Amino acid sequence: MNQAIFSAFKAYDIRSTSPDPINADFAAKLGVAIVKVLAPKRVMVGRDMRLTSPELESALVGTLSANGIEVVRVGLCSTPMFNVLLGLANPKFDLGVMITASHNPGIYNGFKLTRGDCLPYGLGSGLELVRDAMPDSVPVLPEDGLGAATVADDPSALDRYVDHILTLADLPADMPEMKVAIDAGNGMAGYVVPKLLERCPWIKAETLYMEPDGNFPNHEANPLKEETLDALKNKVKETVAVCGIAFDGDADRVGFVDENGEQIRGDLLTALFAGMVLRGKSDGLVLSDTRASWTVPQSVATAGGKLEWCKVGHANIKQKMRETGAVFAGELSMHFYFGNLWNVESGDYATLVLLKELASTGKKLSFMRHELTHYHHSNEINFEVKDTKSVLQKVTDLYTPKATTVMDLDGIRCEFGDPAKDPQAWWFSVRTSNTEPLVRLCLEATTKELMEEKVKELSNIIRLA
Image (tube, rainbow, N blue to C red; front, side, top):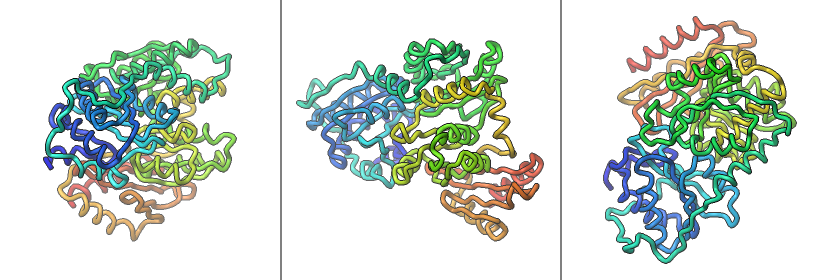
């Protein structure tokens, strides 16, 4: 197999530059591999606004149809919209294929493969079998590109998605008018959010970059990176909005800034949403990745819930939510998973949940952020290294003998002291990238000085390992 094709299969999806190697030929070969390995009878296909998405859709649908598989094309959609439609489908689909490269720049494209029950395929849960079945040659299709199987479009898809999100949010009829700033980043939120706003006239939205554009002409659609939020922060302050909302390219991740234009970190948002979801579910289980602040387990405990740590990545988290019955999960990367939504992410639903909370409590978002900001967190720092395994081993050997608590669930997390008792308590998480020669460091301490000191210490060790 061509190395470029092989390496396009990542831990949780298929993603690479497009049109080389992700092109129509790749999509047709993927269709053959899907038929051979997964043998679906009914498949739903959606796509984002990237420039190569239509040709990928055409080649994939043509191959599946030529092999006798019934296909329903959703057309343009966000990943949350796609996943919710899979969950709502009756009869169920055997497989969903979303054509997207998420927040990656415009030169990328890819595919997310999801079972009909909304569990994703990843390496270790079936995606590696699809990868290994990719044929060397491109299949020959009928002249019209379609076989005998049915290929249908779904014109009501967006309305059904918005209907479901609004029903689930259960908003009171007297929601007050709220001014918000929304940055769609020229991604798929620009297709979905206008329909949501049409149904929620109480949201007075100041919008930015709503036109879906696969070139991403204004900034990278990635709310995790604070430098992408400059225009949103300015809009919030200019318009005196209650908050700002930023979506990534396929709208499965969402970030928020408060009314002062301050970004709220993903793990603090996990703590905030967990408290809302746990209300009335005192024994509920919440999952968090191991990069999260001490604030997350403390907030979950205060709300009467239980916390379990889990590995980074939506394939890992959705599987563990299914196994444990968790009611909510969150990641530092601003993926938020709702148990009442087939364990999938929806930035649209998260937005409604947060606005409902602001309205019902009368609190400002900055106050909520301040209530959760007890410690000093480094955010995730990436290091390019020659040998990720040796770096991880060196850090493990140096720090585990001195740690109060050691967790090796995803890389290594070492804690030193109890923040409730020790004014010099701190912890770090070091993990390796699943797709790149990177080591990722997160660190938190009770004081800013200690955090900066320990970041410098760990950084030097990682660079010299």
